[in-house]
Length: 540
Image 1 (tube, one colour):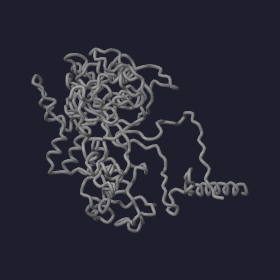
Image 2 (cartoon, helix red, strand yellow):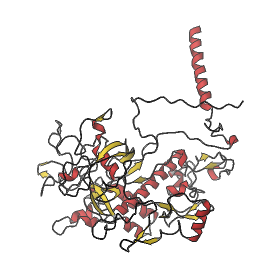
Image 3 (tube, one colour):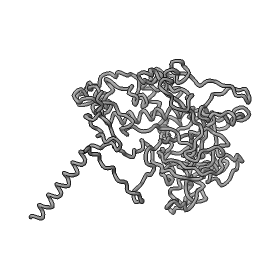
């Protein structure tokens, strides 16, 4: 009995110690000031987490690989993806291509949010005429492919690179808005539609424009009809009392980037990210040794399955030869004539579907044949266009918005942070963030060009682009092969280009997202150095 009591006492003592230790607020390692305490000034430190991917994404653990290394031949004699070793940071990538249903969701939002803006809706429509062919009867695809439910899980095509940029912005805002409404940081969906506990709809929003992540993070999307019942307590000594549902809660504030709640922006993957993810050498790697290379997203030299249950089946949706898009009637080998559902065929070792075949996919990079000669070895990317958010009121830090509530962005003309006095002076004179980059004469050929302070727009190296070639600054890379391509294009190292305002029935896309923080995705079972916590400061 005494032993049992002793054990019980020890357990209770341990729990008490844990509760006391958990209740202690963290201190600054450098000043000793207590965090998350309004009495000491409201300094905040947030729980450090490894953020989870946004909806539809899977984590891709980065590393080094030989870009262009999987190419086994160059049948086009382009010599445009020569081997070079690079490092790709960890990131997130869509498990599948973006499907017709996903794009219809986008169109639906536009039609509901801006019912009178026919131009915005029209500009977002895919070009279904990409299916039209004067020597083929493809007209049923023109009418049905995008909207008929039979094709709802098929990859969207006929979309330009420019349209994809707008979709990525829309997807980012809808994901973050949904997170905030589900958490109660903004008015919930139920309260917004009068289905909450009291059955009353939320008051009319002070800001009639749709949610935008950048505008929200700048504190410009708040007020009646926007603020939720579970806003975060504001520990700042200058904080103002909450209003409405938060009147009795004390000072509250919107979510900040430092809270780690909102997701990073959806975007197109860079070419290096896409090729690394498609190759998926992680399945062939053990203790930093790559046991076997690949020329496709799967192992082996062929394009057919070697597994007993699926032996002989083609592993991707592509064109086997001239006039052979689907195999023989009665035994359709790749189960598709044009595109196939986005979850067709086995995924690669990263869990990504159709990284070869089905549709080619846009990437973020601008095309240059000489990319292998001029490349950074860490996170390589070509196409940087640096911008600043235009300030509507520098004194208040307010960002200028367009008619859709999105920040207005102007070309950057400085390669460093300006002094505040310089920022105000240039803003007032209209030579910085409210104006386009100045036009300067190129002494080589007399053609005007926009200066790029960081060197990526150096016309000395791009004099002929767009003048004597089809390649220009609007040429964007696409990769992966399609339902109407031969097996050569299934190799992740192959690359082609198309102007950013053009589209095709063989080009679609998938999104990516930057991973912030530690790059290791699955640290379990791997050796690590132990890290000691700093000792708390105690005043004498």
